[in-house]
Image 1 (spheres, rainbow, N blue to C red):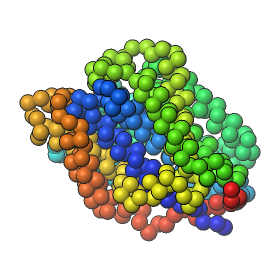
Image 2 (tube, helix red, strand yellow; image 1 turned 90 degrees about the horizontal axis):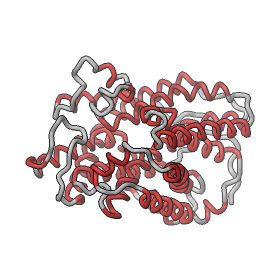
Image 3 (spheres, rainbow, N blue to C red; image 1 turned 90 degrees about the vertical axis):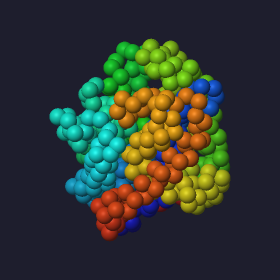
Length: 391
């Protein structure tokens, strides 16, 4: 048996993605969101970072199963998979949720609806979706994906790679259709926010995982990773060009109105290009060099990726506390959770301390809450499958 390789650069992918999420929320508090080229880019980065997180989850969680099947080896234990997922996501989230409910007092947690927040169910009720830790709606999607993935693994255990890819393509098309219909206001937004609407990104990661175990490394990715990130930057520019302007209020108004069909379809296509181009240099040719891989190998970026889960959980409340301290007269406090903005405050003034403080809190959480639940267990000893041929 070949021990599953660790994709070291994926930590840095998470680090860049979590910084994009922090920038999005800080820009919303300073009033920069959707204002000018910078504000529109920040708007896009927030949403695309979440997509990248889903692609990473699909890739890393499905690859051990895909590799074992391609190699004809015994499948990894689904029971162990479940235990590891619970240990990885639940303790840190429960601690953060409880701590932030005590101070500074995020709303909704200590109410009769507490079971929704602790059970990753707040996404499915309009009364709770924006309360507790607002960004934790993505965890609700992740948890449902954790429950659904073993079903897919069992369904595909004797299927060919081609059948698997066709199935993933069908799921991706379903997810894309839901996103487009939701943008057109033809299906509920709640459906697009839940697992069905996020299938495009999760299955994209799963398809990339299959690619890494079934064929040779693509030469253009290995030798010219800059082309991948250049494609992502072009896609980012395209998304910014069609992004709503007019500040946070303009963004809210636009999201509550039907979008043009061309914009809705373009957003899905450009998001696929951006996410795939961003992830590919880390999936192939990890040691082949190139600017993207040098960026991803930079220790500070890798550190942010290592603590990204806790950083993601705490950063919004920390940003709002810092915003409140800077200008309490202009901050609308209806319970912490992205409720207003400071207006003229420069984004970098709030971004730097928010990132620094959030990273510090996240490092503590990682050391004393996250690591005890997976330290010493090692990485899953699953078959990696046939090694890709060198380009």
